[in-house]
Image (cartoon, rainbow, N blue to C red; front, side, top):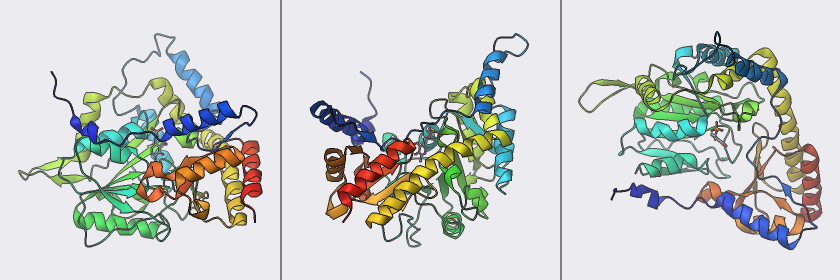
Length: 400
Ligand SMILES: Cc1ncc(COP(=O)(O)O)c(C=O)c1O
């Protein structure tokens, strides 16, 4: 009999979305005449831009001809795609070497797989609330994590405690679920803290494309010193509507060199390269060809149009909550609105209340960590019409 990885027994049941589906299914069965508005989804809904779609077709056509057919590609990604990502960084004023960029099938795999580069006795800081993959992937490999508290007081942007040592630090900015986004000065404090502790920052920038203030950093490498302490994960999922198409990229600078227990140097870049070459055979050429188009001027324009659509939804929600006097975070540099549940409700009570009273479905904050238990997440990925209707119902229900 195999001995199993019993760390899986330590995982909390991932029942958030299953429970949401369960409660909404019961409600719909009992009230078939009351249509629901779903503002809980973390998935995009707008179609791919036309030039991006054209590139996807081109990739398919190349597979039909012996002269252009592609088999296994480089595990790290095609040069075309890596160069396109590097050029995108450059356009934002950030220097990233093309060969520090690893193309992948998305940020979820990479943020989960990165745990393999580290031993099991590190001090690992993870914000709470946050995208649950960081915690679960550490628990799966037997690691203990230390939570760093996000709350209204720190505007869901926890800062380092200088008295505490850390080896690995997860940062998600703009944050899922809170929508909070660190400014450059705040990130600099984290980078300086990491350098002082000889720690690594694992920076998830999956929502960088939603940042509309050029002063806010869309990459940790906008901060001096970050190349010596940070790995950055990014994704085309929300930027370009690739949640189903699948493509992301991870930057592992060659400067990330640490000392092994026997004194020899170990490069995280070389380790990640080895890991990917051993366990990953690359993102499909067809997808990478389309991904390269995402970063062309035409592709960026097309993606912006979709982002503007979502941002208009977010603005509408933010304006409505402001009008109703409900405290919220996010909604400006992020597709997420994170609001405080009214009247001291916890997030599941708030879920039931909104479902029963106005048939609006969102995501209870408890699913993102202990500190989310009195908060609720709405997303801007619905249609404008549905968002408008949902906000009308909010006003009806919560207006004084
Ligand atoms: C913070 C964060 N990182 C990563 C991901 C996953 O991205 P991908 O679709 O590229 O795997 C998500 C998806 O919701 C996310 O919210």
